Image (cartoon, rainbow, N blue to C red; front, side, top):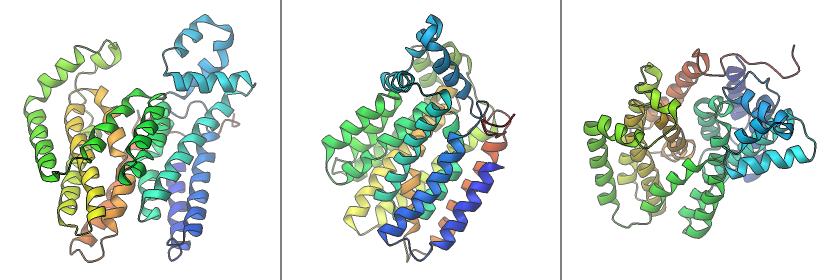
Length: 352
């Protein structure tokens, strides 16, 4: 229920700040209040909240005097190792480690929204429904996402070196984030129509030959956990691919019709992200390993939805607005209350 209460609080804050969010100071205050609350909920969670939380806590508590846990730690990316070792060296406990990781995630996403969103309320709403619950589960990936997503600001302002460097820094926490460079690099190419049509053709190829493509990739993956999960039968996973397809169509439509060149270029990049994600969504139905890529590429919705929602004159605006508000709520409820979601039960660390 905590995620529902959190969403209600964000909606109430949105109503309170409704006419003030064009002011940068008020916008910053709104983001601080909402993300600070989400930080507290995540930082004070019990170790059973989140599918990987207990693993991080065990490694942190025991790696100082256990060769086994030192070995497990070295299987994380170097950025995660450095963060854990630094906090351990200064004598902080495992709960502080969870709080530190949560702070990085919340600050990163708040900054991303502040500098890139045209509507900070809907962006915060999208984050709270589609991404916040799962940030309890895949902490390393969310740290990398929180850092790397801010590269969009640099790419959109033609500061490509800074954008690439930020993604590389993020990859120190989860290497999969490097995939984000693919659609962003495509945004530099001037022939937008060719890129979009090529990605659509590629998705058709993946749809037809997805099983073979998935098996080929998995033959080079030596992680038994992923190799064993050959087909994802849960309906919630199938829904991911369908929604990605719908979002891709919406972005394609808006990127073609917008007359503002700068906004059109931004939406073009987000269209590339959505179309790339559709391919991963199709492969996701074949094997669970691709779920991480879907999660990564879906994160662009936090800002791109706000750009589409800000369209004042479009005749389909009310339909798209309803879609962008209703679907995330349904998705959050499915995700939170699924038995294997990792966050179906919430508790504070100090509760017995």
